Image (tube, rainbow, N blue to C red; front, side, top):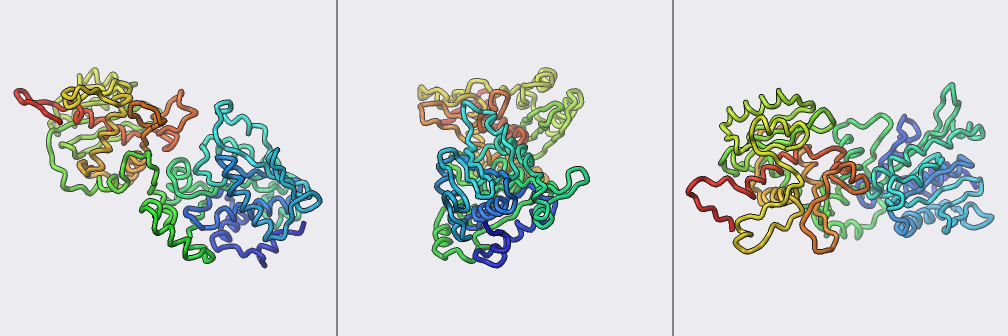
Length: 486
C-alpha cells in the first residue's frame, strides 16, 4: 500500500481548511486529544476516516479503534464514509488487497498488519463499567459522534491509547509524522484520541466547548470548530434544508451553537433562561431566603434572597463552616427583613444543623409531592415522583412564562445558572408514571444519565432556585385570607 500523506497533499483528496488545521495541530503541537466538529457538513467524519487510514498505513502493525454509541449507526454511517474515503485513495478491500473488513468479528486489517477495531460504546447491563475495554492496547482511537457516547466509555478508552506506540521500525516515519522523542523511550507515536461531534450538552460541552469559550483548554487538548460554511463542496440544497428546520436545529447544526439544544425532554426553554437576567418587569413581593448547603466537597453552598419571584441578593462559597454560614444567613435575614418561616434550606449534611439552629424550614429532596388546594378541590393528588421533581417543574413553568428575574449576578455565575437549568430533563419511560426529572446523581446512579454526569458537578445554583417553588406550591397564607389557587 502506498503512503497516504503525499496523496492527501497532492490529491485525490484536498483537505478542507479546518481539516488541515486539525491535522497540523496533532502533528506539530503537544495536543493528543482533539475535538473536531461543531456543526453539520464540516467534514468531521471524513477527518476521522483520513486520520485512521493514514495512521494504519504509515505505522505498520499499529492498532487503532473507531467507536460509536450504536454499532448499527457506526456501520451505516461512519464505516460507509470510511469505505468511500478509502476508495477515493485508491485502496481496495478484499483478501490480497490493501485491507480486509471482518464484519463478524468487528475489525479492519490492513495488508501491513495494522488493525482497526470497531467498537460499540453503548453501556451494557452486563458491563456497566466497560470492563470489555479494559484489556485493549491501542495506538490511537477515534470516537465518532462522541456526544452520544457516555463519558465513562470515553474515560476508559482514553486510558487504553498509548499502549502500542513504540516500534523501532517506525522511527523514520515518526520523525515526520506524529512522533515524540524522549531519552527513555526514543521515538514514540503520539497517543492520539480524536472525538468528532455536533453541538450538544453533556461531557462534550464541559470538556471542549466551555473551556474553548473561556480560552482555558488543557495544553494537550484542542477543539477545531468546523461548520457547514467551512466546506465549499456542500450543495446549497443541503444548507437550505437546515435553514428550514427549527431554530434550535439551525443554531446547532448551521451555526455550531452549543448553547442551543432541541431535546424534547428538556423542561426549560433556553431563550427564557437567558431572559432571567433581563426580566425587569417582575414585581417585588414577600421576602424569602432559599439555599443549597454543601460541606467540604466539590459542591458549593448557594444562598438566594428573594423579593417575590425576583432574586435580589446571593451568597456562594466553595467551603462552608456551619457556624459562619449561620451568621451570614442571619445577617441576610436581618438586612432584607425575611421572616424565619420564609427561609428554606437544604436539610441534608451540615444543612441539618443550620436548619435546626435557625429554626427555619428544611427541604428534603425525596419528600412526598404536595397536593395543592386546587387539586384537593378537584379530588386529585399531586402527580409527581417527589417534592424535588414537583418544584423543578414549577420552576420551569414560571421561567418559561417569564415570571422570574435574577438581578445583580456576575456574568460567570449567570453562565453557571444557564448551564444547570438547561440540562434538566423530564424522565418518561412510556408507562403510566408520576412526573419526574433525571436523578441528581449519586452512588446508586452510576449507570444512568444524571444531572451530575451531564454537568460534572451538582446543580448548586439551580437547586437554590428550585427550592423557592416550595412557597409557590404551598404558599404562605396570611390570617383571615381565603386562598384559592385554581
